[in-house]
Image (cartoon, rainbow, N blue to C red):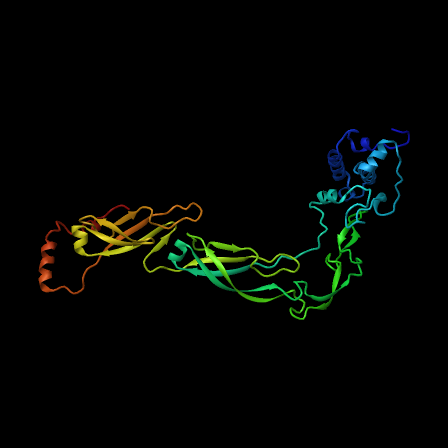
Length: 366
């Protein structure tokens, strides 16, 4: 190293054969430690930060690094931002032949630096959809009318009929600014980073950038859709200004069913049977979500007894597994009984060895 030439490798604490990635990592670590905004009022930290930034400006650029290794000297003054470094001359990038600090400072301040103008994502829309239990169980495809704010076809969502160059940023979309004495490019507050301002509002959308749009959309309801589940259709919400449209959220509600009662993945149903079917046993037809199913009723079945039909319940969307169906027996008694039938019923009454309600009167400790 030529006498009088500063050893920038020593400043950053790296060897002469360090890779560009190692140099960047060393600078990032030191810059975070000595940054003036993190060491307010500390002159020593400020001077150290200047020195390591100067070192990175040289070693972070391949051409300057090669010149430095040959013993070249560099003149740093106070023009073009801190220490002669231009942090925003190229839209937030370092000027030609200089190291790029924009990604470094993006990391230091908790986020990547962005040259893109601010964009607003459109609002999400929420829609409620009532389905029958059968529709939700099997799944279905429905055509649903939708009214939303869509990007204006006349102005393309800009809200303007014509534009003029922004006078504040001269059409670049960025202005110089920054924290402390560090100068970096920032999005122009006047034009939002677009580099232009509306000269005349769009006559169709009156400057809003969006207009009401009615359409019919096809919605696929998956098999096993549950009460309260939500289907998301991306980009079918309201349009955003310069950004993506929001999403359409469809919340499912299941209408009460006259026969089936859903309990999670299980289905409950009450089945009326005749006295003879309950007493003598029978094969009976039971409704399920798959259609009619035959079930054997054993002789002497009591009213209120529950039977399980395995795998005949509701379907779980994620696992695809079926629950069970529980069948509760209700003995139906005819209202109009002729005298001859009453005699037969009295004969049956004699078959009861004791009052079926007798034990209900016994005192028990519950």
